[in-house]
Length: 495
Image 1 (cartoon, one colour):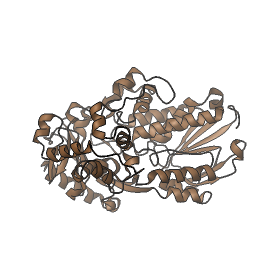
Image 2 (cartoon, rainbow, N blue to C red; image 1 turned 180 degrees about the horizontal axis):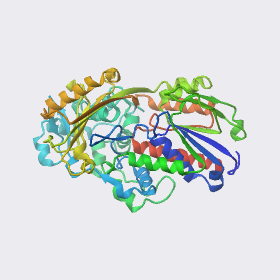
Image 3 (cartoon, rainbow, N blue to C red; image 1 turned 90 degrees about the horizontal axis):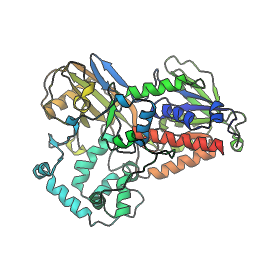
């Protein structure tokens, strides 16, 4: 292994949350001698960085075109620490009090999920859920390494819990089919509770597992991290682009880093690695401007970190690492649709976060988020606004990306009319489709990952894999994985 001060050219594919945090964490994690000798280039096909994380302000309304926040309560300590390092604490906003309630659609009606014993007593599904929870206490732990979300939930609880509770949750998070999604990959904590305590309900009654007091780099959690890591969801007063802009500013301010936009990787040529020596390039990254088609000058790199979706990395490595490309192609993706609907008055009588829709309802939308309730600070100053995001697409509505925007808008407005009684013409409406928006972690995903990692180590040593295709789709998952990769790389160049 070359010394810490040996020159290195690092290329990061993708300028979204994973790519930008990787560049940021790499510079932090590397010893000074190695950092001073390491050039980092971040390539992104879009005209602006941020990936799916993008805040739009149009006609007086603020909407998120991608994730509208992150969940500190799920693997979020590293993300909170990042917010702190970027000095964005004062701009961070927790979910508003009016957004604590959650709803689901049942028989065409929006029903509140109980948040108290009194509400539980009035809920039509209480008896079925209570029976399932009591039964779960006596179900023996499963022996399978993995199974579908549907099979696991039905085995431990009941088909009602699977179809009415886990199904809309999985659709809202993964856009997936619970009969195909991997329980181990999508909800690993629940499987761990089953293995460790014999029962999920029992574990919850006992208080669950305690959290770690330290971060990945060994430092202790600050008071800020401890205070907010149990929060349900957080964003920023001016939207999630606040975080992305701060990261991009850090990268572009680094004299040894470049952020190259309008640069789509077309081919990643892999050359001999000489047993880890950094003498000479190990990779040649070929790219082009996706709009003009102009071929960019090839970039030589000693190491490549890919954070682009697996479905885009696969064709880039097909020539030089066909086995890796074949393994990457095993990961499937779904398209997602989003319709933003805005009103310059209060038209929503329901308080809460929003509602999700079980597949059994046979609707053309997956759910609706009440953005104006969730983060009211993002409403236009001095105005009473209602902002709604209607989600569609996923495994059960695959044609979403091919539908005209007008049809997506009509589907959304029809759902709002039938479910919420909103008949007023919106002051703002905009539809969009996210092609290959969410990777699908199907049953056996763990074995798929092993094949990908094995092929990468064999045919492309020096290639590191990150992003939401592999180790979690949430923003906090992506940030945590980027930090793990940066620490792993720093350790390898220091040894």
